Length: 292
Picture (cartoon, rainbow, N blue to C red):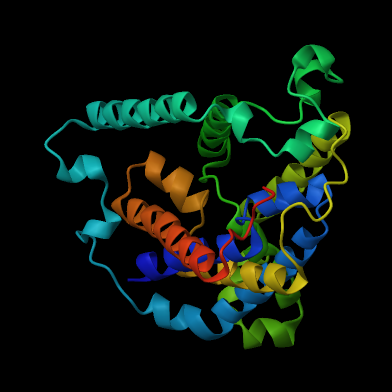
């Protein structure tokens, strides 16, 4: 149940603050001030999880044969390689279909295009200075990044772990480490530090891109406020820790491994987010983020 519950919380948090645990670092680098409050809420949500929730969830033991811990290729009568190829082609087909249905340039914020350009010939530094990149190129880049993490760092790509590692640094103080012992394992170690470096890299890369494309500062264009940012960040990270990953850890890394638990989490993320956003629009006659 924690996959379902955690994923739903992530979807709810995304709607409330207009970000996910990964894109909030991009927002920080892009100059969106409210994203700093989302980070604050995320850190608070992380502390809340490890102080009050982690012990209960850790007691929920799954058998090695449990369906949520298995891969689709383990339960389908198809060889593993063929299964990965088939699902890869399915996802590519969905992406291509969506691109034809909704061309990515038509879905951009007009205010963004008033500041920058999506024409490489007019951009500073050619493609590095574009106000937005094609989703297909970005997706391919994330896929290559996943390969880098797996082969060179022996860990999966994930963003919410950066919040956990950052929050865990206070456990260097002995009394705090004793109060929240479940955070101690995230305090030291190369793999933990890599999570922080990934977050810093995302912030730096976003700042460089936004600077070259002349889209800094974006200001309040994410359509939220301080309270929603803190609350949304809190819900986001609470959900991510409950689910054992976020939109990147479960949604990207887990699904590329065809983990059934990751598919459950990802479906819950989007299902929970869509239901909450639609419910909000019915009660307020408008969407939360019309300016995105």
